[in-house]
Amino acid sequence: MNTIYKLVGYSRATDHLLVAYPIPSAMVDRIMGLAGMHPPVSDLLGDWRLADNGARQIAQLLGHDIDLQPTEFFLEPYVDAPDHVQRRHG
Image (cartoon, rainbow, N blue to C red; front, side, top):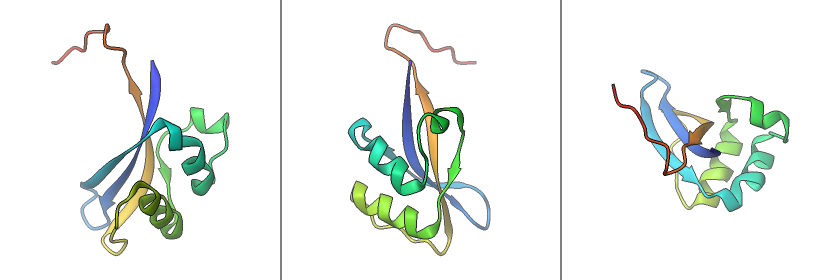
């Protein structure tokens, strides 16, 4: 299984998810550097809160404009199960 990352933004007022941008695997190391994360420690962490400047730089690198006023941004890791592993819904 591989770890994939997303840039996610949550409403500062409601904590609801507002945006989620996948991070291409080729950009993960660069984006972790911008976020201040450094492997191997980053593999053990969950959500990583981003400073506004870091969130803006990462979003621009991914080709997105973001509104920092209502939104708090994080890097979130997800486990990507191989295709041959069945996912259970329940």
